Image 1 (cartoon, helix red, strand yellow):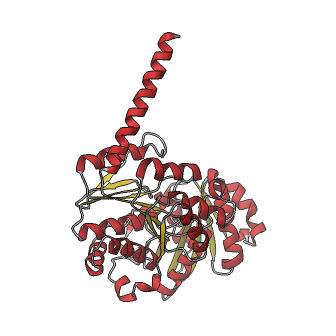
Image 2 (cartoon, rainbow, N blue to C red; image 1 turned 180 degrees about the vertical axis):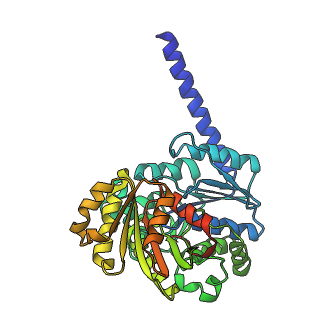
Image 3 (spheres, helix red, strand yellow; image 1 turned 90 degrees about the vertical axis):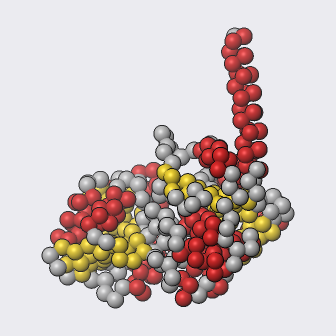
Length: 397
């Protein structure tokens, strides 16, 4: 018993010392930017870091998007290898690496979904000098919901005390401003209209104006000229999970694959589909591909409701990929989707999806992939990417 007590006390002492060491490491970095929100966190993290680097500020970043990355002060990317799933303790290890490089600034994407963990990420790990909340969407409602107001309040857990924050959120800004007052945080709202079409057109992919406006606002806060920041952003690598439009060709038939898997809430998914329609002169045979995860069935329901309410007449085939194949197929009539249009694929190899599409397409086809990146979704997107070149990119929002 004495040995157990001694071991327990030693463990407590070690944890206390490690906590104090982390605080020292974090506070030694002059500029700490914490990026939260529903959509676009990875893109905004990368854009801010690129803009600050271009302005001569020695900057490192960490994203937790499709593939977690540390981005060093030269813009090189270092994969984060996880033995298990994502855990917020990972941030402590990341700060150790930051500390060794002695950056002037860090930009770190919030990796927590649970409201309490979001608070811990900010007030125990990051201690941001500037906070960013990209937007508020109905996603992860089991953890943050059930309403949009609940989600907004949860995201406000990362507002820095006595700090400054920026957001592109419009509808929930009134609530976010109330939450900011509680922490004496100056919250600024940016407007997407501040970014011109000419500026957006300089990206090698189609970036959302909200994301660019947010990144520019943060760079301006740190006195980086707009033209300098934009030049750095144009040269930055997009997130691996960014939405891309890929073209594949077989025997003279062309299919464009629209990878919207990272935008897994209904509002963002619908917005991307409308944007894609304005970019394509001809869609041809339209396939909706819904990739599902068993532990995210609430998200599947939301997307099916979105299709029922907005898109029931806009597709020729409905591809069912991922898990819960029978459950999703049997529920289609509830959402006004004709089962005769469904193509049941499930967890088959990505080449099976590719073959099923080309088996049904005429001269031209369009695949709109939505749902989840995991459980085979990214594999299908990667398969298309390996078959042909990227024609045009769209960052996910």
